[in-house]
Length: 265
Image 1 (cartoon, rainbow, N blue to C red):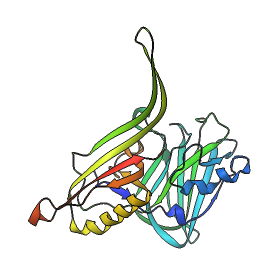
Image 2: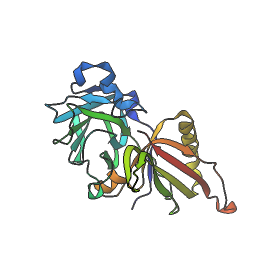
Image 3: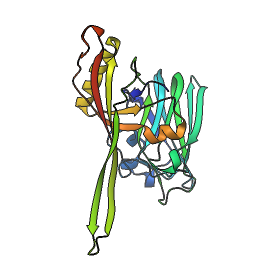
Image 4: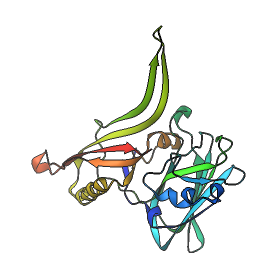
């Protein structure tokens, strides 16, 4: 098990972006949507792909940037969809990875989560997704993406940390007491408690406070060393809120704070 990780700098926001053909060529469904904080299935990069089987987007930077985490979430893809990442620098491939959107037992969000073993320096990243027949629509929706570095605190989060879910539901109860539930949305959340942060973590903690105030999305990976289905199941990408920073242990110089990460829909 590795210390939890936070993706705080989405390099897609400063990248030059290209992608496969968008839905009817409409600008509101263009590739730039992968870099927005509010992207969702209806405000996303809608690509018709290759006969609705494969879609891709490519990000480029100059000079090259350092990155380690890759994420694509809130798509219309199903658990059977697959992905491929290719990172290049100076025209030479420096990293590649592939996998599926599947989660534990096939239950949960269909999303791409990948954390490279070590940081990668690249000037081009191409992410390709193949639907494998998992979308009923005539397009593949790609939204809420992250490519960038990660930060891991010196010591891991407390076991008192919790996860939960907000749900939007309409519940009708019949005369016989039967309940009929219509699901509106499911939004996951995590309350991350850190009781033993180091003084060297403090500059990043202050940065997180500013990110929270601006509404910027943050990637939260509870265990970057977990197997891929667990990564897909537990990773959150959304708005972060940071509690006050305290020093409850006096001379021990252990900083304490809490983070609340709410999934963006």
